[in-house]
Structures are given as structure tokens and as C-alpha cells.
Amino acid sequence: MLALLLLVGSVMGGSTPQEGPYKHLAVFTEVLSRIKSEYVEEPDMKSVTLGALNGLLEAVDPCASYLSADQYKAYLKDQQSAKADVGLVLARRYGYVGVVAAIAGSPAARAGLTTGDVLEAIQGVSTRDMPLAYAEQLLRGDPDSSVEISVLRVRKPEPQKITLVRTKLEYPAVTAKMLSGQIGYIAAGSLAGARQSEVAQAAKALEQQGAKKLILDLRYDATGTPDDGIAVANAFMDKGLITYLQGQKYPRKNFEADPAKTVSRLPLAVLTNRGTAGGAEVAAAALLDSKRAQVIGERTYGYAAFRRAVTVEDGSAIILAVAKYYSPSGKAIQDTGVVPSVLSVETEPYVDLDEEEGVPDKPEKPEPAKPTEEDPVVKRAIEVLNGSPVQSAASPARSQASPAVPDPFHKPRL
Image 1 (cartoon, rainbow, N blue to C red):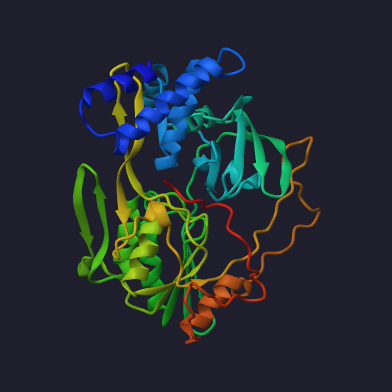
Image 2 (image 1 turned 60 degrees about the vertical axis):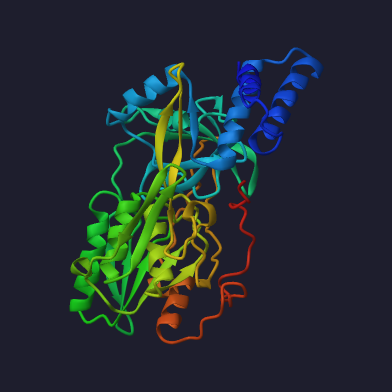
């Protein structure tokens, strides 16, 4: 069917030169034909077509999905029900379903899942070419019900089976405290719900307590809409462009700072890492480009876009980005993420998994939490706020506690 549609499209092009999309469609049609006629055995063309569709979508949008008519009906029904979940934010990675971040305190986070992990299978079903929206459906269910996943991790070449118990999720609360040197520290593990307003309240409270400078920690903050990120940026910006939204058929929409919503003008440092995504990226990009704050840490994931379902005549649907959020300097956040002004890469603590039980191995006596000031990225932020020279991101200075490591979670997108 797909081959026929492509051929019809090329014929309808009439005398259109074999350039641009028509040239690529002709190549695609020929490859499809060669697979059918030359492959060692009769191929399952339905699977071939589905794989091609998912590969096409992943090349343009790592969070896109193609759903059959039945899958789309189930998706719409699922969207209307408040089900329990395991707490994973997902995107496509190398043909499989990858983890953007695990919500702090969720079953997934307690099992040690983190940014960069790949879900090889869910309930025994391979995620290879699985629609992202369908994977999210499989992970949701009734409270206290369980779901088995098979996980591929960077440091573990063999898949590991983990059983997670679904629960009603609660987004982590915003926490705030005073550090030495009259520096206020705000940790936001989520901007969803009312968390973005809690950030503003925390900043105001710290300033009243005598804070002269602020650190906003957005590491592993991957939940919260771009609107939440705009609100957070506005809490620290009293003028200028925060972000804009634009697509091929979506006219540009600017979001400007409203001085009436600003709660703090103190010097600011923002912390990010590869698990920072969505609304948190919008906030970080705005504060960086407006020179309102230094951004310290790792490049963010690249997740900020406006997505919607585009229906097809047979009842199936494509869920994809129809517009992207851009930084004030004009960079598409989904394509480039947010590159910090001061790169500081910390080694991720690794949680080993018991091969039989499928749960994290826990020491008999867990190590006490280290003071916030001993966090290498927080240390670097304090140095920057206290006037330490800032080198360009192209050749960053890295602390001894933050060794340079390659970033395996980003690849060029077409």
C-alpha cells in the first residue's frame, strides 16, 4: 500500500524534476520493491512498512509515534483515564524506547533507571519499532499492578529484567535552603502541576532570609510543560524574549517576560544535565540567552516541542511535533538542547541490579547523603557566582571530581 501511494504521488507530480522529495520517494519505492523481490525469503511487508515508518519518524522527531487505528482508539481512551504509572519519561533511541529521565521517588527511580537506559522489552514485547505512545500505554495500569521490563544499560551489556509496581505518581516537591556565603539553593526535580509556582515562592523566601545569590538546580527535571518553563524563567526575568514557538504551518508565537511576574533579580546560576528536558530546558535557555544567569553542568536532552495527533484516512494517526520551542537566540531546543556556559560533567552514581530479583542491590548500611556544597556541580556554581573566571563551553575547565566523559545520548538528527 505504501509503495503504491508513493508511486501515485510521483505520477501526480507530472513533469516535476526528479529533485527534492520526489527523488527520495523514488529511491524509497525502489528499495521497498527490491526487498520484496530479492530478499532471501518472502518478507513480511507489514513489518517492513511499519519499521520504515518508525525509522522515518525517529529521524525527524525522537518523540513521534505512528499508531494503527486500533492503537489510536486505545490511546485516546487511555488519555482520558487517570492510571497508575512507573515514572519514566521516554523518547526513541536507536530504534528502541529510551529513558529521558526517571521521576524522583517513582518506582522507576527506586529501581535505578536513569537517563540513557534503553527499554529492550515491555511485558515480553520488544520495543524495536514500537510506537512511543504505545510503550507509554503498556507502562500504565491499575495501582499496585506490576509490569516487567528488560533494560539495556551502558555499563551492563546483557539485558536485565526488572519488575516495577505501578503507583499513583507524585511529582517531587521543590526544596530550598541557604548555603554558606549567603547563597540560596533551590532544587526542582519537576515543574509539573504547581511546582513552577513553588520555585518562585522559594526564591522569594530565600531572598527574605538574606540570600544575595541563587542557584536553581534543574538536573533530572524532565516533567513540566514548556508553559511551566516560561513561568519559571519569568520569575527571574523582568524583560525580554523568553522563547518562541514556530512550525512549518504554525506561525511564530513569542513569549515575552512580564515584569509583574518577576520575583527575584539576584545573581543566578542554573544547573542542568542530560536528564533536564521539556519545560526546564525552556527556562534554562531563556535565562542563558538573556544573560540573566550562567548555566552550569551538562547539555540538556532536547525535548521541547508542541506535539499533536495528525489523523490518517484509515483511522490511524501520527503523533509528532508540529512546532518547536526556540531559545531567544533562535536555536531549536529539541535539536540542540541547551549547552551550558560552563560545562561540568559529573560521574553518575551507578546502581547495580540483582540478576535474579530484578531490583537494585542495596548496601546493608546506606551511605549518608553528602552535603549539597560537596556536589561538584554545585561547587562550580558557587565559584562562578563568587566571581571565578568563566571559560567558553568549547574548552571548559573541569573540576577533578568531574572528569571529562563522552556524551553517548546525543546523535545528529536529519
